[in-house]
Image (cartoon, rainbow, N blue to C red):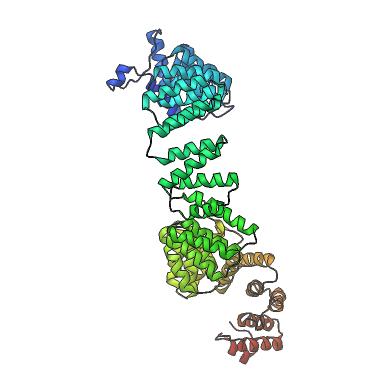
Length: 589
């Protein structure tokens, strides 16, 4: 059997199951009889067996993911039985996957021709015509479907949209009548009729449709407000205004009526516009999205008039007083204060208010943590981070801040626990920089605890996520040098750090010290001199000064070595060997 290799055909296995279901007769489905073959009317007994074998084998190959083989088997089925609607149907799906849309359409039409009562085939053909924007042909198919499945309003809905594309408004109204017979009248159907009348230019009929809706719901002012909005759109502002006023007399806090009246004031330039706007933003019944839009409009107007922030803040506080659970308004206050350069404590208080209302707002919590970090109030950072983990356990930033805060407090075990819990949340989509830093800090903590094997494993993980994590490369290299192991690798890592930051005193010292351990003393002296020259602190690190003394000592420059060692003591060195080096005037390990 010839194998297609020019292109891999991919199509969902569900197609086969769908097709196989259509082969069961109505009686068989009622009795729940499972057939293992498909009808092969007009075939000899042997051809029928051959057809069933190849068709079922095609299904098996499809389920196994061997799409090319399944395609070939289906074509073989068609050679045996050219009148198999099911085979044409399945092959049409394959042709569509190959972007051979004309051939796919021909196969699908053939399937419908051979089995015109199969609604699955009909519906797929209708969808195909819609995709090709052949709305006239699609209408014919969906009309046929609507006759077979008379209770399906979803088919009537599609048919109505197709009629609209073709401008067949009378047919749209007839279809809406059919939908009403099935489901009864509804607001949606009435509004749809109104829209059809509008498209036909029959404003009188459109108005009567809306009037009918109001009459059917006399106690619901929203329908009357809807009528008012329709009148506004048709330049009948005075009538609309009376409707809005009457609606607000009945329901003063009706946000729909308030919004509509606001639109009226805006259209006619009424002096009550700002007053109406204030009422609406304060009203608890106003939708949050609408309130946000109006508040943003008020802020823009305020900025155009000079930017009086006290007026805006007063308005926001008034809204929050009436709507204490409105997290969006609270967040708007925080954003506004930040943009207007309010004092940081005021901005942080606004952010905290958001979290009181919506403690699961991860973005606001991260912003608050970033703002508070510079104060170095580690207890505060812990206090903010912990609830973040409870409400957003998959947000790694909270483990990061919590771990760092504990680290700053020298609470190594708690810090390590926070970072370990954080890395347990890592996924493929995690931020590589954050994950890398997690492992780098874990490595530092583990090294401090004397768990060097675990520390080096953490550093390896760090570099897998971010190969150029400079701080990790430096620490990893230095700690390897302390153990005098893997010096070649340590040198390579350290060299990458000074290439990235050639004036870093710390990185230069690490590289010099590794060269020293490799007995490359002359080169070590070059880099330790650069480390000291680039040190901008008033007091050079005692460790760096001791390293400089050691390097100069092995090079026979004893006077300079003694000077560096003495400076190291003054800088606070706690090295146990330093006094011995000075006394013996030579480097000792």
